[in-house]
Length: 108
Length: 399
Image 1 (cartoon, rainbow over the protein chains, first blue to last red):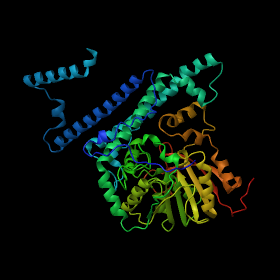
Image 2 (cartoon, helix red, strand yellow; image 1 turned 180 degrees about the vertical axis):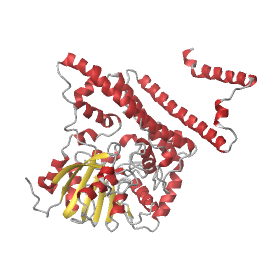
Image 3 (cartoon, rainbow over the protein chains, first blue to last red; image 1 turned 60 degrees about the vertical axis):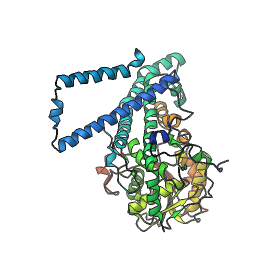
Image 4 (tube, helix red, strand yellow; image 1 turned 90 degrees about the vertical axis):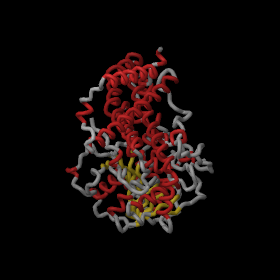
């Protein structure tokens, strides 16, 4: 049979407030497995999504820097040559250590 | 490294979803991931095949892989191919998710824009009673959730908007700002090979959102143009998009390409662009037969596709098979093994009237009848073309 009546509405309601959740995962039941362990395939999926989102964040930061430069509030070389003072440096160290504690938690 | 065009260079029209900063950045990353896959990872797959996989297979089997299936068996465990596939598949999933989240936010606004553009227009004809072919409704083609026909809300256009906006990221803008390179390639082929061919009625079967239909309007301003598709969301969006771009008289008709309501011998040009690989084996000959029914004597049917597998190396076939295996293109492999020229001949055209050719889109923004010498064939998108001329009906040469 080449054609048939089908209910072709999507299995979810669009939610304009949480579009990422509304759009579901995109992973289908027939998702292929490329590694020997299905969890490793999922880890690749998460990693590539993280790569994408990091690029999005870097682009947004770049936009902010460009806008600051256009309005002559902060020049590019000021960012490149920026040296934090002692208390700023201490605060940054704290942030960096805390960040590593978070993302490397599973290796503890 | 050839960089993809950033998403903000896409052609702007009233139906295009209004992407915010991060949504554009996400599309840009998708385009870059695809460029990385094509330019960095794909060559590594070939290298792996030639440097280790091929030899290992020869040692084990005593002969070279005989066909693409044996290449697949040989390559299945190879880390380069796995890495290539993991990144390519995930990039496609990220692209679809990025598009879905964008249009979920925009669905109601875009529907209102489309409805306003359609108000009082006789150029959009939908058929709510149409039996949608199962080969369209059952498949989330290239991982597009719900496929072409799905509707989130009544009178929805959002999957079409996702298709339009996301395609630009998927192909890195290589289709030009209007995603219409195949249509421009078809026009360039006609102008080069048949400059006096002047169709009065043109039918685009499986038009989708009509992106490849509109270049025909630009060069044949007096022709009646009918863009046919089974998917109402694509037609609603495509119709409104065409009008937003100033193409007010292109007709959009919801019908099955295997059995349109159009009259016998009413068209001079019946074409498809990248449609055949999304049709079932049963539908394909019926589409060709429908083209034959629609064409007047002296008319032309022309179909643009990726090249058939015959004549390509087993490795090349295997690499081109990726979309069939992993990108929800279930008819891809079968189509590329089908002799469409022979099928056209059998569909009433007669083998003497059938031809195969190649066509290339001129760079976007350049004249469609520009000098071949000025085109950058190394970069421009290129297609295989198969077609047939309509002899006087009933006397099709068969030789």
